[in-house]
Image (cartoon, rainbow, N blue to C red; front, side):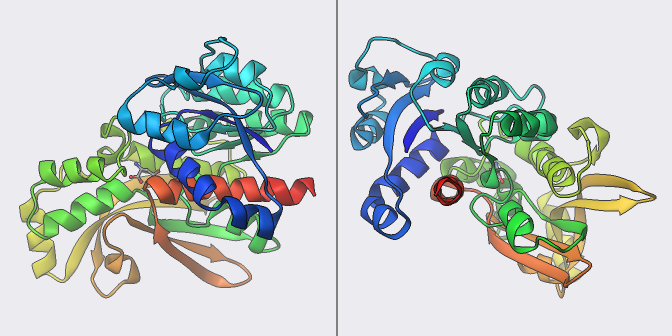
Length: 341
Ligand code: HSE
């Protein structure tokens, strides 16, 4: 399977490390053999080689901050869009930064690949929150797969779980902690760290978005509830249709007061049906310490899925991080391997 990376930052490199570490197991257990034919990154430059790029060397160059062009054979100097359009590839791995307002440049990369029948795996929330229907229809029209497990709760199964394992059940409501950075910040503030130090640590650990405003103002969780509303509930919501509040107004004193009262602040995302419509919202809520969501700490996420057939099914697991989000892309790649065979 020929792979092309667009975006070779935290997530792309996380996937590359998993592909290299698991090479023999992936081939032996799942029949998944891969070659990387292209990598394009706005900061690191690009490399294209239809015979295959040495991925370990690409990781080493990225770690040293050296340009990827050293691995290029063909002298094309393709940017992400040209790579998506022209590279010999079976799967485009889109892991550029999320822009929830425009969905670009990721949406253009995804369109260019799908239009020529190249499968797409992405962790990018912008294109999904803004253009899910159009992109899904484009994929169907060109007989390509469009998979995006990592957009919600990183590698913790949610979208694939609902699509595959919970097929046959009606999802009535989803509610939970969908942003790792803010849950990490609230956890560390309760331990005594300042807001600024906790945010800096979340950035260092690779949880935060490129512009962390997207996390702390709730936009990242808003993108995720919009994705759930549109993908799971079949709605056609835009992020701007839903109320959204982040954690920036919560002070250390608020957190201490809540704790003294047996409560904890959590940033809660919710999707539900009301009067024949699908609604979504993001807001900080005081959760009683006796409730399960109160015990979800650090960058861990959780979502309670209310269904007709099973009642409530709750998934708890990593919500952000390099290997964790890279893993989501790996699970989507293995879905493509299974469908192709
Ligand atoms: N910034 C996001 C978070 C990354 O903290 O949850 C995962 O989508």
